Image (cartoon, rainbow, N blue to C red):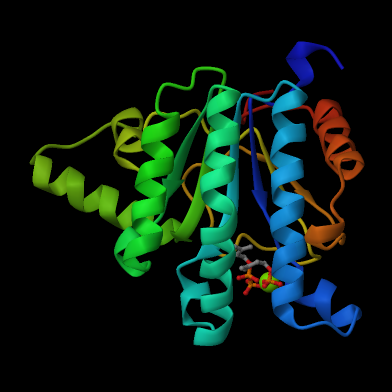
Length: 228
Ligand code: IPE
Ligand code: IPE
Ligand code: MG
């Protein structure tokens, strides 16, 4: 694959942890733990392939109305894994940014996020955006409200900068694991021209090889952006 065929920014909707566990007669929490382990390996592989920006959808605003027991389990996993992984990203000079509405998250989780972001802030080799408590409509709406407060009309480019993803280039490739064919309120504005790749593979089974398949599919796409 030559450099030109490689996406600069890959976004992943990591779905299917619960069904992965169910298939194995395990509790959903076991699926989330398997998903967390896979997420760490996958992120490493994505950057090793030469992708510069990676955005992972870990928890949507809508997911926040799941039962408290499941959410508590997810936050516990976050507390267990996040600090160590922030240090690993720092070693690789990858900046970490969490997007989403932090006011919806437990205070100690927000503190860990802030520490992780501060630790990796100087990273120049790549950018990892983790979407937690994230909703695409909420993202657009808060950008609209910021624009309104600015008191003048904005261009598309200026509007993009008001979103939680700031001035980061849009995803070239959006992958969704776990069989569903929808965006589930992920990056709605930012994916206007992303190439979409859907797979039945449940997230914990989405191996590095499966990622390579998605990159190969991307390399075969012809991106026209409306032109002839
Ligand atoms: C995705 O897996 C992870 C989160 C949304 C937290 P799910 O938990 O949605 O797994 P399924 O879709 O029930 O299999
Ligand atoms: C999308 O998965 C959100 C994440 C993977 C974080 P969901 O499981 O929440 O999506 P729906 O409910 O099937 O649309
Ligand atoms: Mg799901």
